[in-house]
Image: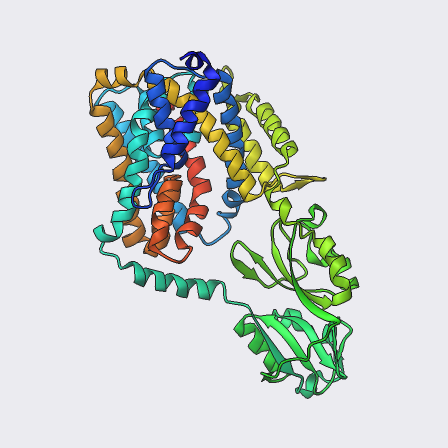
Amino acid sequence: MDFLTSEYAILFLLTSLGLVLGKVKIRDISLDTSAVFFVALIFGYFGFSIPLIIQQLGLLFFMFSIGIQAGPGFFESFKKQGKKLLLLAFILSLSGGLITIILSELFDIDILLAVGLFTGSLTSASSLAITMENTQSMLPSVGFGIAFPFGVIGVILITRLSPKIFGVNIKEEEEKHIEDISADYPRIYSKNYIVENPVVFNKTIGELNLRSRTNTNISKVYQKYSIITPKASTVLQSGDYIRASGTLNDLKKLESAIGKETHNPLPVSRKYSTRHFIVTNNKIINRPLGQLTLIPMLNITITSIRRSGIEITPNVNSRLRFGDRINVAGPEENMNRIKSFFGNEKSKLDELDFLPIVLGILIGIIIGQIKIPVTPKTSFSLGLAGGVLISALLLSRIGKTGKIIWNISGPSNQFLRKLGLIFFLSGVGIDAGSQIISTLSANGLGLFIMAVIITIIPMFITLFVGKYILQLNFLRLLGGLTGSMTSTPALSSIESLTKTNAPQVAYATVYPLALILIIVISQLIILF
């Protein structure tokens, strides 16, 4: 067939077959995008090829999207109480690297082939990308091709079987997690109170400093038979009704300050309403609420911010982020104006602005070419992949430069990441497939056994330390383990074990650091 002589036809044929294979589920487990690599191996073995530029473009898009996704979490993970989870990434990556070095010495395996086994066993395509660029060798991709199949399947099997292996009751772990989350992120309630404390009579809300003292937000005041929007200058009188939002503990502080709770509903006023808006206006992103002067001018109160599934009680120093869902209260006639102020354009969440992407990649290419001196006679550079990764990490941390928003919405970034990964894996798979059989013939099944060891032993070390030494909740431990392996398919396979988001949160905490660690350790293995 003539169309098989076209490299572009081969590209889209193998990616189509790979994506179809990736949708096949066995007990709710699928290979997803990773299946493209396996199909490409077969095409490479039979001598087919695709345009070389495709792999490079895929690499650029993939590394940039990874950096944008990982950047905020990478820097924030060092500030939050996630040290135990982050330690998992260190344990798994370091033990995997040490085992790789020991096995390569014992069996006299080329170190470039060994580092490919390491990246494949830990399913890190980004680490492979940087290794291939820095070494200009095909051996890492061959090792990756040998180890990657078990790296994908093995981590899924171990994570699913580990509760039985370690005798863990998932339901009990789920209940413990819910208790912990309730303590860390208390639910926000809205309640009504009667002003009865003589100490607050005839004093303004500003004078009483209620927001700072109680960490609550007063959204309505009912006095003189009408609903009004509270201001700092609003004077509280005996018998006034107020509606406030906050955690149960904070609302108790408010009750002690002004008067008892009442279950009588406040009268409904057509002039006053509460609405939900989504923050999509670039001009207000990353600015403290205290600097947004239009909010007090329109008598608007932001009662809560919902971000990543968590409700936050805002204050003057709170900064809005792109995609935040906010609850606001205020006069009905001002709602349309404040709606445009916040943006509330849901379509923007799905838009993909290519200007920040191409500029970010360009900056990364420049960074990658910078020579960093090591000795008076030697120097090294981060290279194409490393430069783009560093660029994306830094830009995602900055968030905004002038009118340019560097952060990309989740769906758009996922599209860019998958497109880049499909193109990159197609090229790597084709190249590895042309050599994988000859390499296995020369080294026997020993390489595959090495890959299995590099996958399994670090995982069990990490599970043992996480459960018995760090005493982590097992759902969080599983999420941290899959994040340490940078394995999204494995995360998907354990989502059915629980109705909570414990594995996903742990995965997101660990993944950014694990991504960087595996890259660094793979380069250290080469130096060894």
